[in-house]
Image 1 (cartoon, helix red, strand yellow):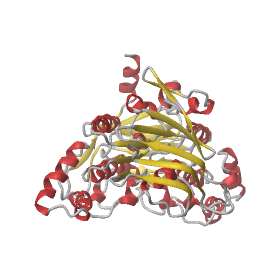
Image 2 (image 1 turned 30 degrees about the horizontal axis):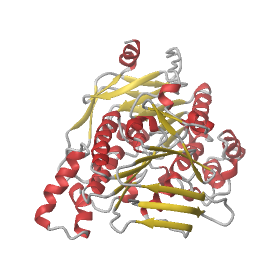
Image 3 (image 1 turned 30 degrees about the vertical axis):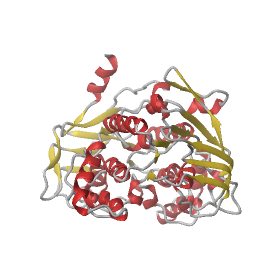
Image 4 (image 1 turned 90 degrees about the vertical axis):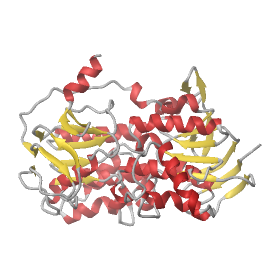
Amino acid sequence: MKLIALERIHFGYGFNQSEILDDLNLVVNPGECHCINGPTGSGKSSLLHLLAGELSRPYEGDVYRHPSLLVGLVMQDPNVQILRQSVGAEIAFALENLGIAADSMVEKVQDSLRRVGLYISLDTPVEVLSLGQKYRLMLAAQLVFKPSLLLLDEPWAQLDDNGVRELHTVLASLLEEGVAIVMVEHNPSAFADLVNYLWYLKDGRLENGHLEGGNIKAGSVKQFDAELDLNSRLNIKRRPRNHSGESLVKILPHHFRFVDQDCLFDCVEPLSLYSGEIVALVGDNGTGKTSLLKTLAGIQANIPTFPITLLGKRPQLGIYGADLGLLMQRPNRQLFEQSVLAELQFSLKRFKLPLSHAELILHKLGLTHLAECSPHKLSYGQQHTIALASLVCLQPKVLLLDDPFAGLDKQHVEKVVQLLQQLSAQGCAILLTSHREIPFLEVDRYWLIESGQLTDGARVIEQSNVG
């Protein structure tokens, strides 16, 4: 029995752009897990929206949907799906639309939360959740109405390792129940034992991959092999620790918390970020990584004064000019111009810097072909890269990056890594966040948020690698 079938689908976003989906075919049956991989910007998310029946533009071709088909979709940026202010109300929204009796809703909502490993009060404001927690929330909001087809966009990038393990368990149970799953994933090896069909999307068409001994193989698709299992294919490199540079960020021991709330984590030792250093801030979803970065940039609201200085000043919005750059987790919040080139040139004009920096950065990233495109029509990964490029071309003294590799394929990751290494060599201090260790980037040190403590965790990670 077919749940959904796409036949000879053609789809594009404009007359001056090539088709994103070109003669594409796909059949999904109950209990199957399909994994779609492909370059950043190749149309993977657009394909999910087509499956969900919510494309904003017309397409050519035929789509068969089983009469009983019920689709759940968790997008790459869960913020764009959120409709309610509290956790319980967000999950109950779908039940309300299905006409479920109110007296049975609470139990269903709580079961759905537990299933995704989110143990929080139903009254918790959604705005206090981290991006990874919001991804779990949106997953719970889909599972509560028991879809027959679940669509997931880049779950590995948004979840910490524990979240990935919990998701793996949930997906396995759904498949046993006959639910079909289609996921878009740059790291498909994380779900290798669940995947029945592996696809590579390029030039608008799906090409077959296959599984061998639990490992994902690409068959005849040469490009695919280069995309897979990024973490296991690149060796960890570390540069010698060198504190001869100037300390640009200083953090003294303190209790990091929001006003009138419990402590989020304790900074238990003095921490410094030196010019030319690349430091990775690693921790699980919800531990406070984003809040710390926003505090350093002077934009985090509802916090007391902490013993933190950046470029010799207490963090405050608007006092650093081009010397500080911040990349947010939601890149679309930093994009507002009509073209990619204008986006990069905006801050260059503001700080009276050479406009040629914009073209140079686009060339280094291999994105010159997007110069006249609207940044608002690009993929999540492309938006992330453009937002980063707009900061890099300013050549700041301190660069704060919140999960900068989310949504990027291997080729884009390599280009971003090269840019960061060049900035570091020029004396820029870089602090970036991640859910896990970053084997493809040479970092000087790791700061860890674990068990409610922020520490310099370089020695801990080095010892684990030896073991």
